[in-house]
Image (cartoon, rainbow, N blue to C red; front, side, top):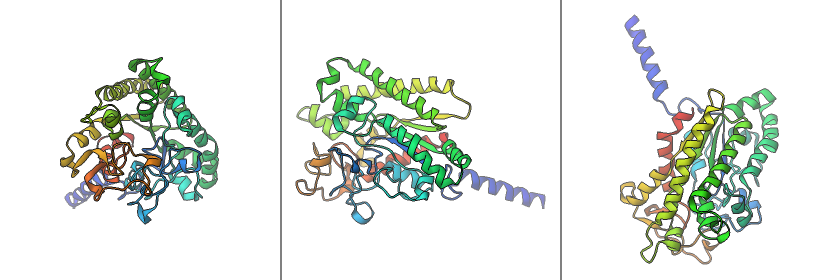
Length: 355
């Protein structure tokens, strides 16, 4: 009898340890995201900015074929994250939506496409700065959460136990530094990296001060391999631009150092995990066939070399015949398929460290 009970115990323990989040309920009560177009599900729809994707062909493969404002043909990482955690199917934008109490309780995205750690990046695009995204969270959202949760103590627990994702910085290099002269005249690459690292570190400190205890900080991708960057500075053969990749790598390295310093001054139980997407996306780009792709140098929309946002629209740009063969949807953003592979890799490698 004891042997049978022992067997049952170990069997149940194995199930608990190896089961997915959706089998035993969500590991976290909510997901809160701050950042740019990689994780913006439509907040920019209500802004006066050209950084929008709320028109066809964006969203052609999203349920209902709806152009929601997501910069892809379908779902984006935030959607895969919350569905993988068993919270809900899609992560909604905070702005422009009639959010239900359940949406508030399980999380939203405050991300604004084309924002950055550099305030000038936000000015150039006319979008919501990271600091203002945090203010929305600290003010309006927390009040709504308190109302939806029923009392302040329950709301505080949700705030403390939730998973936070910070994801921006690409436009700081791709647009502000390498495309305009405003920063490159005054900073070399290493000093601009330090400027961005300081800004990003300040944001993490403020987010921690707002009650976040589980933070996933997304590093920069290989910026020089984005189709738009290949076109702008990759020569006639449109090679990956080494200096832009090196800038991204330097930022990633410095942020990992700063995160370790930050953790030393924070209470026990606080987790800030650097989510290194650079090697994952670079491997997909360099070995597309391994992942079921055929094209990794151009986007599916239009020529695939420059089109993004307003220039990627169904009136002036046709799309590729088979989007599943493409790593990139437009000249800046991956396809739903590529996002899914990327998010799955993050789940597998990093997210268990945040639970």
